Image (cartoon, rainbow, N blue to C red):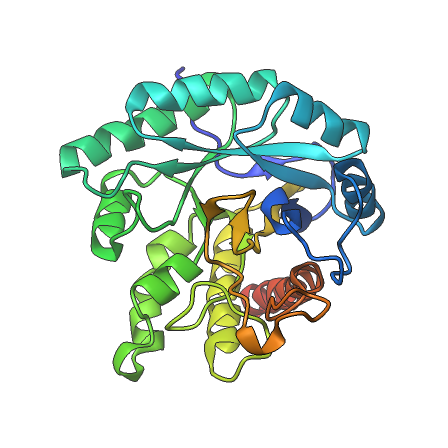
Length: 308
């Protein structure tokens, strides 16, 4: 019998299905001294994450040394990388398995793929997950083959075994899901993806900005609550003891290092010189708040399914 791709992550316990509090290490990058997450060294940051209740860290293109440092701090490791061709998928997953990563999430393609090229990449993801017995989840992300909503839904129809890492601000902002006041109608059409979410990158955006603070005016936070709850319902349907969904705050800085510009946390001139160096909010404090919001959505999902 041929092995199957991994659907849900499982920790081998008898715990009920749960959210696991993980974090993408990009959240800790370039934190200003005024942030509650600022520490003088990476090792001290990892220690803080452990004390604050995180179970795993996600590392972009992890190295053996970076993965070991996280494990030395008592944290599990998940990986993230970019795959442009079908052979890339196996090479990335093989390496990340060697480094001890529990899960791999992928930015797949560059958004210019033909349907045939998308199919080849999707098949590679499923085959690689099955071959290595390793969860491999495709991220919903601009600039990749999941950039377009219609083409992603069509891909799911052709490959229903695909599972996703939901970074929904890329769709909420990039596709202006609020256009015409039609958010709920538009978002409801994404149900085939929501049903298949097994990993989540937590950030919220508004129609004009990919990453915002959590107290900006507007309806966006309620919209993300609605989408996250549908993702959690999809995870819970069919979930069993020990199954978990990895929930990762991913709140990125304006830039990393001297010249790698991301433009996520966008400093405001009127806040220049304050304790957060102009960043509109404390990203580490926002990460903790997103975790609390996610738990509320998870319990709402559990309750909704129990009464359905």
